[in-house]
Amino acid sequence: MAHRRGIKRFACVLLLGLTTLAAAAPAVAQDPAAQPDPMVQGLLKYLQDPDYSQLRMAKIREGNDKAVGVCQPRQVKSVRLIPLSAISFAADGKPTSGMWAESAELLPCEPARRLNLLTVIAPGKPIQVLLTLPGTTVTDALLQRDAAVVAVQGAAIFAKTKDCKDIAIVDTKFDDWTGDAVPGALFASARPWLETWTVRYCDKQIDVPIDFRPDSRGTGFTPRQKDIRLRK
Image 1 (cartoon, rainbow, N blue to C red):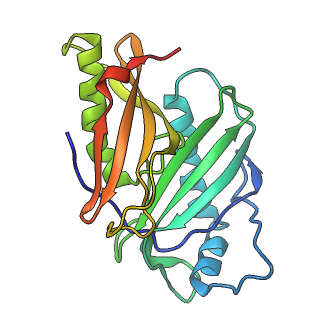
Image 2 (tube, rainbow, N blue to C red; image 1 turned 60 degrees about the vertical axis):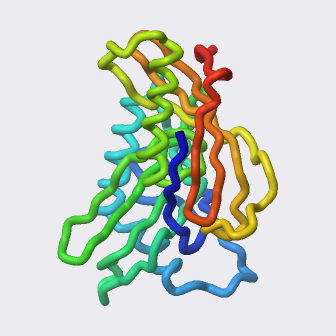
């Protein structure tokens, strides 16, 4: 099965700071030679807002509770912040519209645990902080929603049963780029890549490798059915 989906990324900022689980926001490392971007600066300042920090940390705790295995993290390391649209701010510095994604690693956890958040602010509506799929996937929320269908289907075929009701994608892993940039792809410099998504299928954890292929309409995806296996 193939599908095409994606969100264009507006900009990218790398977050390198550590915080405790009770802290308001991550510390940020920035390139002093880079020209400051007012939107990015406004977003980084808003990350320190106590109300937003409370929402963010509540989602991080929720994601940790849902994850496979026991981990009692003491720190959160923000490793990626990606504005997905233009972000507008009111005079008090609070955003009035916009959307951004954040990846955060929980420390110390073994194996490593990364949670991904999506913040959505629509005019006149309450702020939403949502959990997207955990792990190192480079897919966005829309692509995750659609590719999850084939990941679960692949796990069901491997398990040889469709009766399971306890199903969840509990981890993702970016494996590697599998080709060069695709000419005419919807997203600039897009390259095909491989990821492995781990599906909890009742009492089994099943690794489902998925090929992602950018093209002029978005991104297609196909599971590698012959390579699906139980997670070790």
